[in-house]
Length: 503
Image (cartoon, rainbow, N blue to C red; front, side):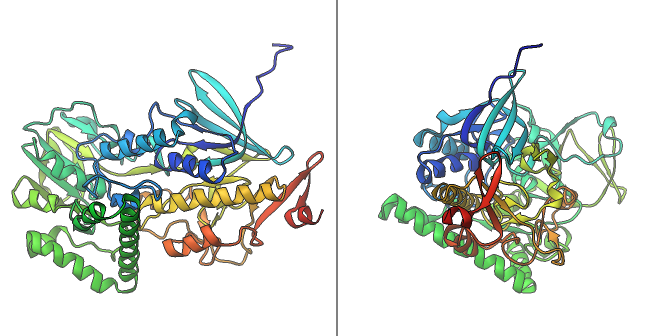
């Protein structure tokens, strides 16, 4: 209508997308390192917790210990190191309340679009809320939305699925109060979700079968860390937590390096531990992967629960390919038919970048597959944008904490020198591009065309070394010749950081 204008965007210094583990942590770091900055967290859902509020399937738990999945600044004080989903959700909510992060969260705000304008040196963000579009502006944008689609998981096109007369359930959309007592359940998949579900469902199910196309490496650890619990009783809570975190992180990194440098020896050790639990025949048929350790993520089996369920004949494993679904279950390529009342498709995640938000820079839509990752925290050609992406070989939060700290360093550096824009520059054209993640997992392979690239040299290399990242992100030079800084002058004219310092 003539004479009417859309309202001015609500302005913040920083906008964070997502109020999960990463988003709440980012808020704490901003409060600590950038106390004068205004920020808001836009959360698509109606609750804090992200992954740990979304997933509600039986047995949901961490696949990393909570001494490294927990925040560096807030000790994990519960007895179990391998924690269940509700406990982790409580921990994130408690952190948000304790640090006042909950006051900054706007729930049911689904961010759909973010556009950068170099003339104003601002992001304009659009979010759907209560049937309307709300607009925000910010100097900096943090994506803490994870790397997969919260609306839907990955579901292959199973031939004949419509013929099955029972229930087909994806773990990402687990029905509330599902009655599976006395039911025959087939769980399709061999990843962390399947390995969690199978022993958990045996509490009521008649029998649970894990149907896998190929085996995954598994490693068993105690759910409780007795040494860590002893330390907590003996020392101040933060000191005990710091020591345990250091020990756990060092062991994670050491094991990963051993797996990559001595794959044959690591493989035999992992398989030997499983043989002790369920015997050589089971290991040969169902637990011997075709790839080397840590080419995909290892599955954690706390307190041997998966192996105990198999030994007690409450669960079994079948390694075969699916031919089609039938009225009563699944027909396998071998000709065998698995009868089922419930089929659980633990077939993985559908990946996306930046929470599926459309990103524009000066009117041009960003294609992340054309960009390179910078220090694992930013993308080439995208100004004032930080993306939290955790480790694939260790706990997510270890890297999330470091990225948030680094973002605060960049923001404070820019304030100190009166700078408006920080944009990572791409490597030379003759440098060989590599896939974003050095993993062969199906969910990364399926999304390879959506993901940014990396190289084999810093700062365009996605490091999987916590020690390296501490040096680079916490102590490395902010102005390194690759991160280009500009200062806004007048009507969009720019000058470099060094010129700003001289001028």
